[in-house]
Amino acid sequence: MTPTIVPEVTLSSCDMTMPVIGMGTSSYPKVDPETAKAAILEAIRAGYRHFDTAFIYGSEQDLGEAIAEAFRLGLVKSRSELFITTKLFASFAERDLVVPAINMSLRNLQLEYVDMYLIHWPFKFGKMVSSMPVEKGVLLPLDIKSVWEGMEECKRLGLARGIGVSNFTSEMLEDLLSIANIPPALNQLEVNPLWQLKKLREFCKAKGIHVTAYSPLGASGTRYGENKVLGTKVLQDIAKSKGKTTAQIALRWVYQQGVSLITKSSNKERMNQNIDIFGWSLTEEELDEISRLPQQKTIIFASIVGPHDVVRQIDAGL
Ligand code: A2P
Image (cartoon, rainbow, N blue to C red):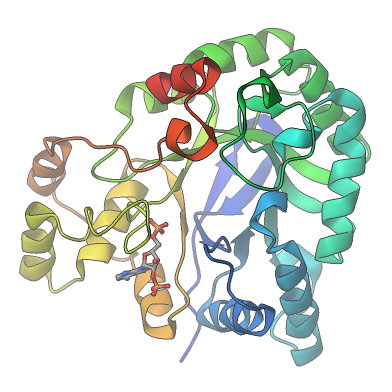
């Protein structure tokens, strides 16, 4: 089967392009390294070139091994064919800890640079944390000036081609933009038909910040998402009428919002399905019907990190 060519989006603030679909590598509980590596190689065979990881996922090493194997097998010829994103963990969210943190991620990934480095969460942990929720005193507000200086240093040193954020509210983006020498290229957020986040997306657009969706299927089948997005009748009916799957309708809806997306599947057939969302489109009527779906957020930080005021404020702004 010929691999699908995924379109690219231009990230205006850092003059680079990014494939609009990435493959996510987080899993809970974490899959074993061989399974993780096999899934990444399968994704490369299907045409995925954009991979999304994070220090806290524990998947950087598996992704690094899979990339090295993809080069050995000749599936990928040059580093520039790949787009690799990783994220700064909250325990390292301070100016002097950022460069050592990205260097640790690069060692895990066996790479000299990542294409995108994101601040994973808009809060900080006051110490190294290995399990969540965390107790009250550990969770601290982010000193955005301090941490962004570290992020800018990563770009200046050539360790990251682009820098950005994840889970940032409009207030936090305002703060960041007021001090940034290099503006954030993108904001990675939960976006799917049941969490459309229209206002925040419009804010990002007005500021030239691209939005990437995580959990575009509402983290289907996981402890967070159950089956809400894929179980939505409106999406199922549109899928039936177009001869597509419900997942493809949800992903295509995200793409038609001008939002790139990180999909996640360990199954070859679903990987192929999820990348096959080009060359057809949702009509205005279908988009309108989806825009009226009742909204329900999947990822609630207070239930993951702890019900602290800083986190509740973030949940309220996302
Ligand atoms: P699997 O790995 O068994 O395919 P999200 O991208 O919103 O985080 O959701 C990821 C979840 O959705 C994974 O559990 C994945 O399970 C499932 N999934 C991914 N693609 C599809 C698809 N095309 N149809 C049904 N479930 C899917």
